[in-house]
Image (cartoon, rainbow, N blue to C red):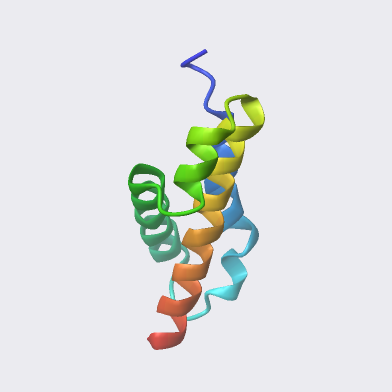
Length: 84
């Protein structure tokens, strides 16, 4: 159902798991920048997110593409954190 957004929650939750690793940012900065990265990856769907979205047509695929977008967001936050 469209009102169930567990996949989006899990994607964002990946960022929360690693939030203490971004010591160059404030808590709110990580939330805002992480959300922007997550939404960009979720919309643009770079590889393998797009592949998962197109080829896995069950609930696992729906959830997995957002989890990978969350992992990409954490990686970008980590790179951004190290550059600052």
